[in-house]
Image (tube, rainbow, N blue to C red; front, top):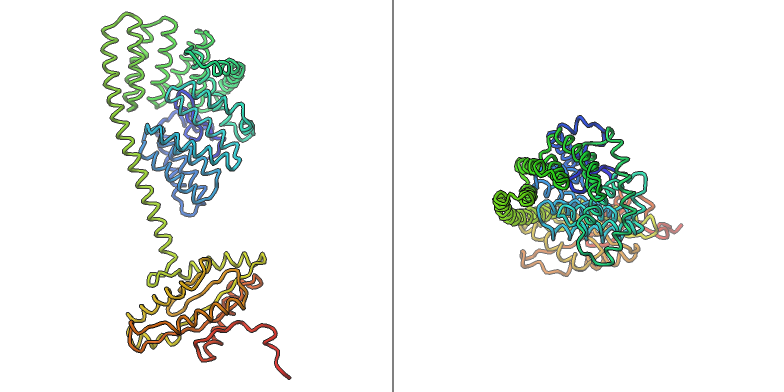
Length: 557
């Protein structure tokens, strides 16, 4: 998925990121299948997300899609889990731009779960990271989705401020790039909704904010023109895109006072969403048309639409919008002088608010539980990954880890930063096992690991290759320096006390040193070290030998 994918429209406003609109194929018939199509897309996204052969960034973006699909289906628990996985794999990838998107995804999942503080925290994390790396597209993505957050809370002024700040910033240019169509269109949808609603409210505003909004009326006309052009291309667009455009243009028509246009757009919106299996969207279209009827003075039709919206929100299990629709219905009843019905409906609103308050705390608890489970899973995964690189007996790094470090140092050596390796073999170790038993032999291996590791620098490594064989990896040293270090390690073994493990026990080691200079591959270097080790053993063991230098190879005639 890219930022060019159109947004899922959860009216009012739109969030960018979900591909559930199906606009990648332009197949409206598929979208009219409704929730079944989203479930199929969710399964496909999870297949991609859990593919062990996929790169970390690919898995992160697939989990991002899965999170949005789950949220569209109102499965908040799954949406949160997928969003957390999205962030996990984004971090694994090391790609900062992918992490920006992941933080935004998690913010939206938290928003849907009523965790506003958590959502704002994730938006801020995304913004800080995007600004640090100079990701203009990321900054724009945060602003557009932060405006969606405010629109869902009906904080129209705050939503407008996010978009006006973006409009007047250098990051706005990122929306004009050819591959940012989805982000560009979502900006205009949210701009029209937020500014139109703020102007419609007509409340007392700070003079600076009021001046800013008045200056924005020119951009409002431009954005409305963009949406009108989008509406003229509706046959090439998804249902959800078209629904979002109709909703935004209806609000703009109410602001301009053109009730005839507002009614036409609202009717179109209801008809369009009524053809799909999206009770939540249909309910919101009915509620918007109820508002148009009320402004036109047709209170009976306004009551009918608002009442139907209550039923569809109940079917969609959206207590928030069910409560909002009852609020609107109560206001229309009161406006028509039907005070008893207004009072009874307002009582339902009060009960709905109590349910929402309870649900809020349940959702917060669920979010904390899922987040804790994700942290525990991440710790377990890190522990398993660490265990896979360690020898279970001694706790020393194992052959796999040693080869990883050698690969890193070999790359540095090719850039002119040589290192050294030494193969260590404990002398006559088979006799230790035969004479004192395998338990003593295991204790010797563990103590050798502890004693020698304590003699090395933090950047060096002692790894167990198997049996009594170890490898010492010394970074950024010459061959001569490496031989000096190994001589010290040899003395450490020779001078150590072993009597507490078994009376008469003595342990020494032989070392073969080779340089990792980038001129030979790793296998070649290890072969040289093995030859040097053989020379140390041939010299009577308990010795250090390096690869003979050219001067040492010249024999007297």
